Image (cartoon, rainbow, N blue to C red; front, side, top):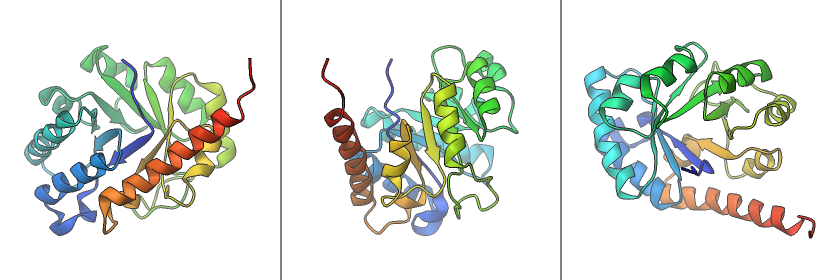
Amino acid sequence: MKYDYALYLVTDRRYVENESLEGLAEAVEQAVLGGCSMVQLRESNITSADFYHAAREIKKITDRYDVPLIINNRADIALAVDAAGIHIGQSDIPASAVRNIVGKGRLVGVSVTSVSEALKAQADGADYLGVGAMLPTKTKPDAKIVPVSELCAIRAAVGIPVVVIGGINRENAADFLRQGADGLAVVSAILSQRDIRQAAEELKEVIILNERNKKQYLPDI
């Protein structure tokens, strides 16, 4: 199955009204209606029971619009709600172990900051990479910044999709797409906006325009 990583929403209920599950569910639906093609449920400071409940509710929405749901760092919850996949970081169990847990039918994404991490993730069975933080971000203020030169080196080194994250917004999105990113992972650029659906639509338009420009300059064969 071919997945669309172009506009990848990462959740954070701190950015939604009352920080509630209901508010998060409404925000996710508006983001999907605006063009988000993948959703990762990434919620910190939450009990396992609440995470499971949130995953069930969010999956009802993503299923309704045929959008894959990715669960951050919790293979058990990904399996329990029959999510499309799981995303892990460098401090989590290796992608190879996660692959053994979730099987071949689910996506495994891995966060990386270097070529060496990217190559290892690919060798361990990752389906895609999350590269970043590309810019300083309030979502993860202590995240290591990845230079654009390293992003380009990662893109050249691996054969799986690369999704950039960290400080991505409407103003800079095209710059990262031109560097070869297959997708934009966003949190506050969508969830903290007054009109979530419109914010997603505007980012989607940047992606569409970039694709048009690429096709315009492709050589005739």
